[in-house]
Image (cartoon, rainbow over all chains, first blue to last red; front, top):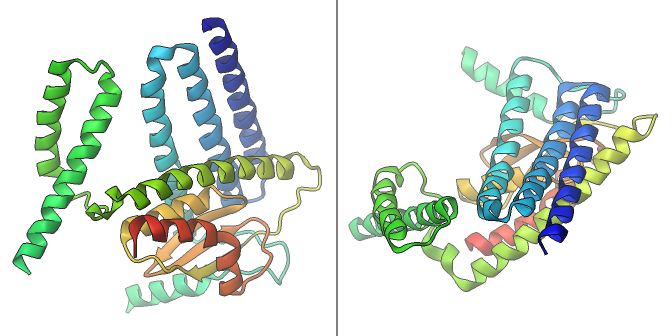
Length: 119
Length: 172
């Protein structure tokens, strides 16, 4: 039983490693900060979750603690990426758009907010 | 009015107490009597002091219907997370980098701050989307492959499935 759990845990760790690698590749290849955040957040959330779950399965006495860490990752990761994206927009790094028809619905709200602050 | 605010405060303290007690037991994970009793007392005092910072929801979340939909939510969320990872892997690995990014907006039907935060978090982890800002009840979402910029269609495409479940959990 212990050996089987160890093999399953190792598979989960491997899977997490693969997703984390793909996230790193995405960060290198994407054109701007928002797309990089997209790749980074998703990969680190699932990659980190599956890695920690794998460790928890290999050492079953850690499993409950691993679950707490997984829940914590699921809550904190998207929050931090949201804060980064918002701060990046406030620094006037506007998103990369493929052609002139690209939509940026946030620009109006952002400009309105700035006008209120100045007046 | 007086009793209403008192009730709100007490329910907030109770929910915090319950949450902190569960986390305590998960971290100690020994379940011996002295550990559990210590956790019960400690988490009660912590809940008293911290409940005014974390008033997430009413006691309605302990209703069986809410608990059932919370479990449904976890599974829907996990499936969306795995799908979004494969979607991202496909985009990253294909040589032409098939993206058409942009920021779209839509209005959410949720009322409470905590429910809105849950929705924004889930949207960040669904395929190809990242929530950028939330002003009043308008969510601004960075979409890696913009298909439409009509707020109604964006709403059905991105938020509908999570919003329906969250409406049932928080009963708004």
